[in-house]
Amino acid sequence: MSQPLINAESAAAEIAKRSGVPAHDVALVMGSGWVSATDALGTPKFECDAHELPGFLAPAVEGHSGKVRSYEIIENGKTVRVLVFLGRTHLYEGKGMEPVVHGVRTAVKAGCKVVVLTNACGGINTNYKVGQPVLIRDHISLTAASPLEGANFVDLTDLYSKRIRAIVKGEDESLAEGVYVHWRGPTYETPAEILMMRGMGADLVGMSTVPEAIAAHALGAEVLGISLVTNAAAGVTGEKLNHEEVIAAGKAAADRMGKLLKNVIPKLV
Ligand code: HPA
Image 1 (tube, rainbow, N blue to C red):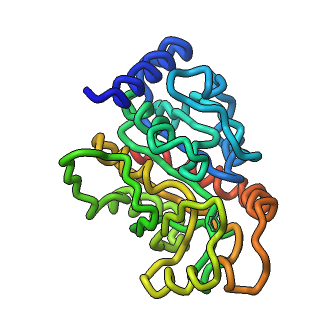
Image 2 (cartoon, rainbow, N blue to C red):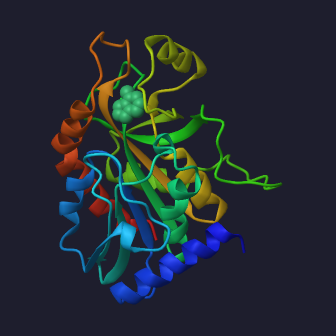
């Protein structure tokens, strides 16, 4: 096994030991502004600071609190163990790719068969409104960075699982689906870059999710990606972009997002 996977196994073993939960079923990565959506999941059975676990870095961005929690959702007599990451590491932090995908690799090693990735994003598609959740149907990577190395020719035709998207749409048929562009950041895009992305067929743009989706899928997990449109992308309205606006839009939508996650998660495994 490669060193990154050995590190993920140690972190998973530490989570099992400290939480008393031998295996989890679903992982949930909460992006910018999504943290308060976890209130809908109830009281966690376990919580620790992510950086106490092997391989996790301290968080760099305000609004990303860097915690790992274990929740139990019981529905119709079925117990689903959910491993929640509050905050994530981004490529723009300059720490390389391994810490960016360490959380999802840890989750898969902890038993998770489904990985739910949430994020805040800019809306390129002008039909989208601020505060609207959008299911990720596919992605375009503009970072030229992959979490995989070597002759590892992984198929990505069903990266954002069609099966899972159908289940989520069964819960809320008004949900839109879109193509997410991964932009390295930390600058937001220029208006010209947004025009280029729209021409490529993109609907959403953000600075996360894509490496984690690839790393989780390569280990055999099914992936669900949900973006919350926190602002119109650069140049769409002429307004300037700022991080406070992104966090505030996340908080405003937290209730709806939390309920959606709580209802959908038990149906995924
Ligand atoms: N661009 C990139 N990342 C983002 C944006 C955006 O407009 N909004 C929230 N994250």
